[in-house]
Image (cartoon, rainbow, N blue to C red; front, side, top):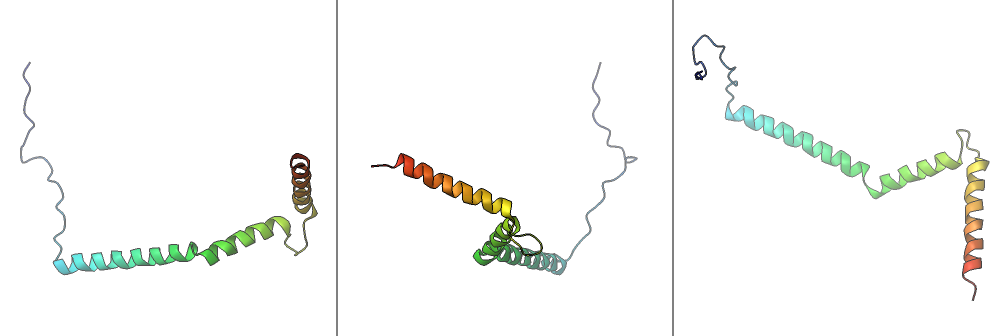
Length: 97
């Protein structure tokens, strides 16, 4: 059994050629990509700024303890208060002199 070399006949379909672009078109694409990257970096720096992160944290905490009408939710407040009191009691028990 003999192995045959791959066929290189001209009847096979040719690979599509990349479009020829001028240096100006390439530079315009590079400039557009740089502008998109700069906009993305600006957006990320705004989202990750300390003030923005603090606002997000404040909104999250407020969402846990305050309902949509602005009144305090008693159950989460009671859980936190009970936890704090429990920790204070444990600290008093285990840190006696």
